[in-house]
Image 1 (cartoon, rainbow, N blue to C red):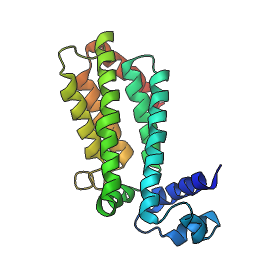
Image 2: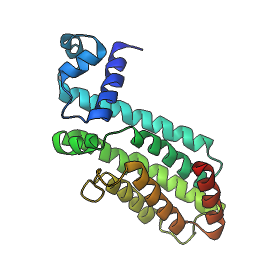
Image 3: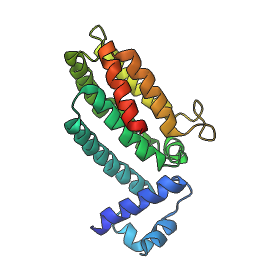
Image 4: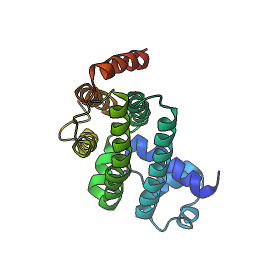
Length: 203
């Protein structure tokens, strides 16, 4: 692994564990066992490191979502595969990380929002068309409205005013909201698949 990628990977672990604000460049250097000067040869300051790290992680998420799409046998399974991946990811993240990005790194949070509204929207529209064609999703839905609804649902998961982290686990919120979304979207044929995949994931 190249040093630049190692810096990004180790920094991501620190941010996920402690949040962004409380981690200093000294902490990152100590974690890596290198000098701050070495880090500054790759990133001019913490702001740039945070920005590049989020670009790096979003690219990784896009690859993961493409992998899940390729694995899925149907549109309902695709949703479950994506959500299972997101649950695993969220279970390792301190919710303060999202709060810190919104408050102290708005340009990075905008990057995150753009990812949701561009990449996620395209993925959702493809998934919705696939599900309708298979007979698992209701054919009378408005694809654009449902895609935007889902994006807003995902956005709401990270809203600490709605779901304070001392009361709710992000992964639990994701599960409940997704099940609610799917049961409203699916036909009776689709409901059978939801119950099948719920049973598999719960086991």
